[in-house]
Each structure stands twice: as C-alpha cells, then as structure tokens.
Image (tube, helix red, strand yellow):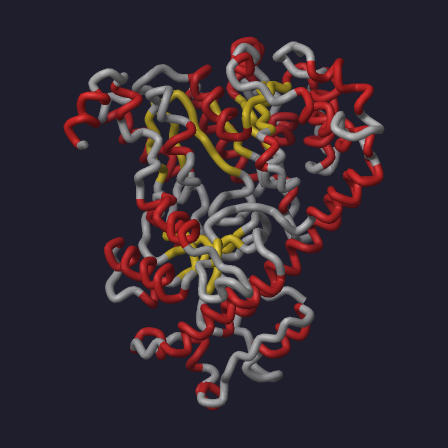
Length: 492
C-alpha cells in the first residue's frame, strides 16, 4: 500500500503532496478525539466536549426568528420562490450590488457608525480563509513574508502560505505586558527577516485578537500605521471579531478610523479582512470580505471570486437580513449581552478554582494561564498537559504552542459554541481536575491559598438551572475576596 501511495504521489504536484495545509499537525488531534467520541448529555455523558472551535452559537434564536418572519428572504420558501430564477442564473462575480451595499453598511454599524465603507471596495470570498489567501496572492510573491504578532490564529499558517508560497515571520509578544504589540518587537522581527534576506511585504494583525480576546487601543494602532508607512509595507487588518466586543470599558477601534484621522498615511497600504462567521455565527455561509483602500488590489482581488464565489442564494438572503436596521441593532446588542454573561461565568469560575485568564474584552474564547500546572516550563510539558486535558478531563482546548505563543502554559478555550448545560459540565470537569490534582504547584496557587479554610469543604455541585444558580454554587464562600490581578477581570 505504501509503495502504491508513493507511485500515486509521483503523479501529483509538489504542492499537492506537501504538508502545507497542516491537516496532519497536532492542532487537529483534539478535533479528532472529539469526532471519535463527542459529548452528548444522554448517549455519551463522558464524551469529549468541543472547546477548540471558535463558533458563536449564542444568538441563533434571533436569526431563526427573523427568518420565520421574513420568508421572502429565502428563495426556498413559497413566499420567496418567485425570486428563484433571477437568483439561480449566472451572476457577476463582483457580487450582487445589494449584497455589497448591505455588507458595507453592516461593517460600519458594528464599528459604531464612526466610519463608512465603500461598497465598490467590497470584494467577496469563500469565508475569511479565502479572503486571507486572496490578499496574500495580491500583495506578495512566493518567498515574500508577512510579519504576524504572536500568539496568532493557527489557520494563518494555512490560509496565507499553503498555495501562495508566502512566509510568516512571527513578532514575539510577551505576557509581561499582556502580549501587546510594541515597536521594538516589530523592529526586531523586521530586522531578523532582513538578516535572512527575506523580503517583508506586509504586517498582519488581528483586532480583536484571536486567541487573546484583547482589543488594540488607538495609540497602538497609530504606532502600527506609522511603522508600516516607514517601512513602506502593507497592513492587513483581520477584523472578523469586530462585533464580539462585550464590555463598555473599551471600544473597538478599527484601522479605518485611524487612517481617517491620519492624513499622512498612505492608504494604498491598508486592507481589511472581514467575515460573518464570528460576528453573526454563520461560518457555514462562507461569507468572507476584503475591503482594500488600494484600487489595484481591489481590481485584482475581484477576479478571485470567479474561483470561489459566495453563492447568489446566500447573497440574496444576507442582503435582506443586514438591510433590516431594527434586526441588526437588536442582534448586536443581544450578542454583546450574552457574550458578556458567558465571559463572566467562565472568568470568575476559572479564577475560583485557581486558573487565571488574560484580561480580554472581545472574542469567543478565553486565554487561560495554566503555567503553574506544567511540570517544567517547556513546550514538551505543555503538550503533556494538553493530552491530559483531552484524555482525562475530556475537553478539546488548544495549547498556546499551536498559536506560536513564545511562552509555554497558555491555552485557548472557546466559550460560545455550546449551550448553558454543556458549559456547566465543562466547568465542572475543570473544577474536579483542579481539586483532585495534588501537585505542589497547584496547592501553592494564590487562589487556593486564600481559601485554605474552605478548601476541605469545597465541593462543586452543578445544577441544570439558571446561570445565576450555577454561579452561586461555584463560589467557595460569599465572602471570598477576588484579588486584583493583571490577568483577571471581575465584572459587576
């Protein structure tokens, strides 16, 4: 069989038989464990819970309710079937005008209407994956590179490089300053690339960040814009989590706002990637967007949908939905409210069982600090702990090394892709693991030290009731203080 496979591979291209896609990387091992034995409250109560997939499933009821009230939006209903022919026949791969107008309007709305987007600069693609590859194809030649601050989304290794031949150069960011992007870190990465004779064509940032859940402040964004202008390289801003900001403490600032204020910025260097996969929880619709301020890039990118076009049926439905201002306003508000509640439950519960999380304001995940659980500060120890989490706790979470994190012991856990009862089971498993683990490092953790008197009596009992009931049971004591930490936020 092996010989036969080798003979078959000889008939394929080098790219086809290469491992650039990364499907065989450890990143997918947790997914395979989940696929083999997924959690089910009745059939498989001891199954693996999927916490490695950044999906937003908290507002499907709002979308389903809108669909029931607007049957004409779909060509697959008796009310909408009259639009079937016009939608089913060939469409310009630049996209339906009403679709591009609705997307541009929605992008402005989730950014507080502080900036407007030009529908003529909207280029569609098959999800954010296709959008990222499109922008890499347009901006760089094989062998060229993009700087990417760490930790960053593992899919970038595939999206930007697999078929384009582009390289990624990590910009090392540290937990000592909450993984902020600094000028010195950017300069160091840029200088390293030059030493290796790698031509840097751009800088890719995610804002809000995946996996950190943090938001870039205005001054940091201004510094980034100055940096790319000084180097005359492109800036690609992945803003697919723009509407997942769930606190009022910090507002999301788009790069589009910054360049409106910076009259000296070369707008030809600025490009935004967007999608409906995260903000609206519609990854299956495969709606990816490139909004470039560069005319040449727009003209080039518009040819790409001839290969990966968003279906006309999807465009028809989405344009109707996003044109409904009342629905959009309600959806954004409710999504923020529900994400805030879910984040509060996770953050406070994890803290009370001895796990810190990075201070974040957005996203569908938490960046957990499990460094004190490592037997030593190495990535080998991180992978060993990760296998325990999968095989014993039965949770598919993602270790920081998958995100190119420069420090071992950080894990991303997705919190918005499950219902409340599954969430309670997941948190119960984590609490049980922390309680049963007798490692000296865990017993010395700050959280457990402050509660030694209560530790013997602490027993987590999860109900199937309301989130408020669950939170009242997870508390060790009604008087337990929560010390201020740079890694933890407690919301009231």
